[in-house]
Length: 86
Image 1 (cartoon, rainbow, N blue to C red):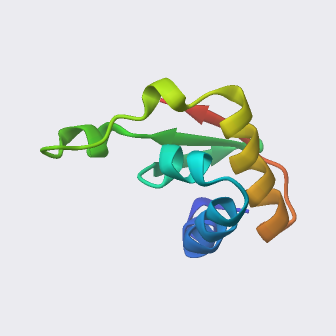
Image 2 (cartoon, rainbow, N blue to C red; image 1 turned 90 degrees about the horizontal axis):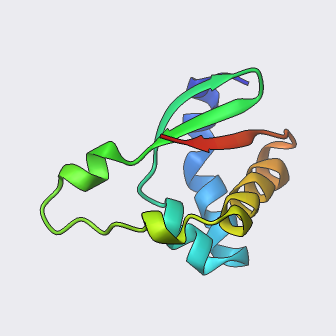
């Protein structure tokens, strides 16, 4: 899996996440996919923080929400990725 392939499927992953855990979806819907290396996906929220009136959900990005995103990726793509937030 490369970053371009993941980006092509990102909306489907977010749809799966929203169906299963709306709080996790709110925490990750504005993530920017930075890189994939050794089954580790790096996400950034820098762009979202630059926008006027941007929502800052950093306080709710808890391990259980990260696990929900990892599960949605696994369900949609059939792969296991660990998530790191920058």
